[in-house]
Length: 418
Image (cartoon, rainbow, N blue to C red; front, side, top):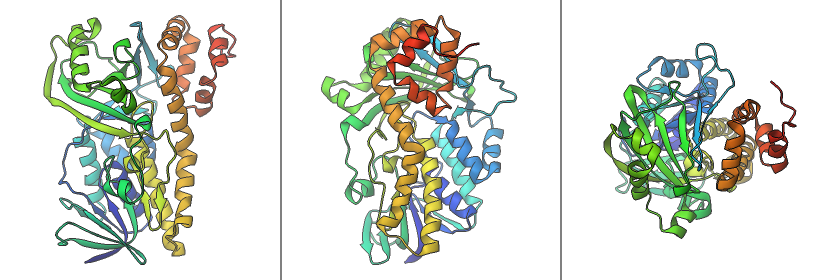
């Protein structure tokens, strides 16, 4: 049996970020994953600038090493929106951006590459004990922590603090922490890899297509290195059930029949197959800690409700979990009330953002509003700049929830001038 202060179950981005931050705090940890790396993970592969920021906080050299390998990622400088009335609007993350000087605001990287990069960073740290191909099947609460083991009890760990970061289908989250699936706060998605799609933005803008055929879901095209792209379709689970909607068929039908997409995909080739996955959204506040445990990333239902991106929030919550772990060890206190500080801090830095995303998600389901806004934005550079600011300015996002804000902007009374 292995005894440790901190055991992290799940070596995806959230688990790796937790272990790396602990290491830089001088705290050893045990990191366990059921897979052997490199391994693939079904995902949209789009990663926000939040990831860059937090990894740089842990160690600036981590993100420098990642950005130096251009085979791993495509830099993303904005979003191309396609509206229900087929207007195409390019919204940069930053107005008048300079690719040579400005900090990158996001990138797209296959999970098989990005996750393996983080594992290699973990291997650099001698105080992180990584155990691959090791499934944790049994969680037993014991005095002073948890006893964890595989089915045959050939691998047994006793930990004072358990950090669970093993994804959207975490057995611990559901059966021990009580986080049940709620269809109104959960989404289903499918994705496939394609090569040679026409019309991709030269600066790597990711594409979100809010088409009337799939409202209130959206279709995406996220550019990858070497002419590849991650292509997918996502929709909230309650709508999927209500409409008995088949995401795989819907995605194929769009590509085959939608005039704009059919033309762009005429020379494209699917590599592999269409695969599906679930996204537990962070639009509903839930407890993410308890006696001797914390939940990180998708295991804590922390996926952004609007974009569907979970990697940035997984890494951020892992960073916070590591700092909370240090406090637990310093004070020798692993109780639920003491660990509640983790919930409070995650809510403070991520909760409001996810609530705003949820509100915007519901607004995006109103086709007439999306079309009206698109018509105005296409004629008004000031409006476009305001939307750009929403990606980095939380106060601007809050204003966006007020219909009067948009009315004033469309009438040229928003107080923003070129």
